[in-house]
Length: 181
Image (tube, rainbow, N blue to C red; front, side, top):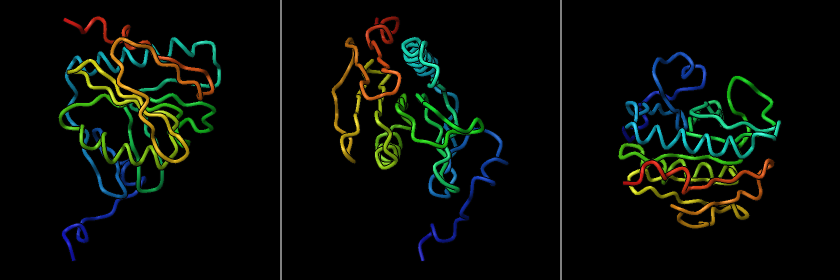
């Protein structure tokens, strides 16, 4: 038996009792890092504001930050930013968001680029945006059949998320402008 066999397996009921910020990966608790750097939070806010402003007239969708997405009884993720539409539950996200944005930090990069990438792809999230605040760059992935197809690297360009209910878009030049030196 490996070491993992001796670790307890947790559920959503356990998760709800914990203090602090956590995620639950297939029954294993993952402590969220301490509060990210100011630029990380400011870029996440700018991304959310840009998305939110572009869907303002759409009454079926919302842009949220760090909201629980319960994928199963033993998996709960907390993406940095989501665009959700027609969500039937107001306690946590139950359906795959149309767009997920993760702002990379040194402590989360591996999880965001591997575990979350694979999970979001498997769960059929239409678009996954990985933001690199140190480089002022974002990678946009679009689900094509069952795999993500990289749409490009964006720094000063705009991207239209054509397959979202609300026809969202992000002007990356506007998001990153105040952070350029």
